[in-house]
Image (tube, rainbow, N blue to C red; front, side, top):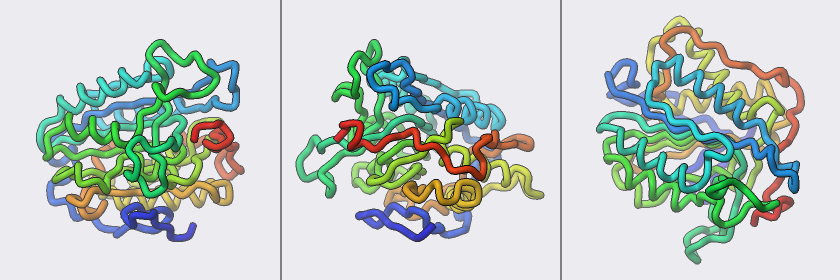
Amino acid sequence: MGGLFSKNNKIAGGHAAPDENCDPGGAPRHSGKQTHALVVCLNYGDNKYAPDYELTSTIDGDNFVKLLAACGVTDVTTLYDHAANTAAVVKAIRDVGARCKPGDYFVIYYSGHGAQVKERKKGSELSGFDSALCLVEPGGRKEGYFTSGSYLIDDDLAKNVIQSIHEDVKFILLTDCCHSGSIADLDSTNWGNIHAVAFAGCLDEQESNDTGNGGIFTHAMLMAISKFSGSQNNDEDYSCAQLYNATLKYDFQNYGDSTDSQTISISQTDALAGSENMAWPLIPLQHFSSPLPKTQGMVAKIAQKSSKLLGLK
């Protein structure tokens, strides 16, 4: 995978991050802090008008919840399919964020469709489009395609996180979806002094791939965590940057050419300066094995269609 950078030069895609762990505080396992998690996943399998929407995202969600359990995380909120409507997701962000104390981690994991929609505030995006999570409207989706009420755009996602947490809470966003490179708008000055990192399945202009048994990004990340867990020093901290580098390695080794259109990316706020400055919080309390999909080594099935074909722009 070649080294790629986004328009704002703060999003690294397919390019190794500094392979260090410069966080003096350490992960919750060693610092005594807590991790609070929100898991949002949608399969879209109930839409008879647009069957190509269907994904296997709840498999990702189940696998991530198992990781959280292995790490001793007890504050876990899950929203799947129809439960993941825009109002419920925003409320969950605010509720979970409010429970985080200074020094704690707030982790949001999302697997589903992502889209680019015309920017709400003219001139706010270089591309002219906001990135958005494709949720459902309260009561579910009644249309063949997503509507404005089912999008959670990057501006609103960032605003709700920022307003819900203390500035000393560490925030991590994990998005296994299309058009997700800048979904958290971490380059915005609105983040102030908050230390935040975002892992994304691809860059803004790209699509993420579904293997038919979960997403490529999620599987590659869990393989990396499993490798760290199985190492001699499995109780030691490692940084978000180190996890990102290992995720790139397993993405390439296990999926190879099937990820040519998908470049896993990482970004961080100015206050953090680099992803090597944040310890990865989810360290299993005992050996953790990744749920390696049966599609290992095979060309992944692209279940997430382009936003243009789906009429999402």
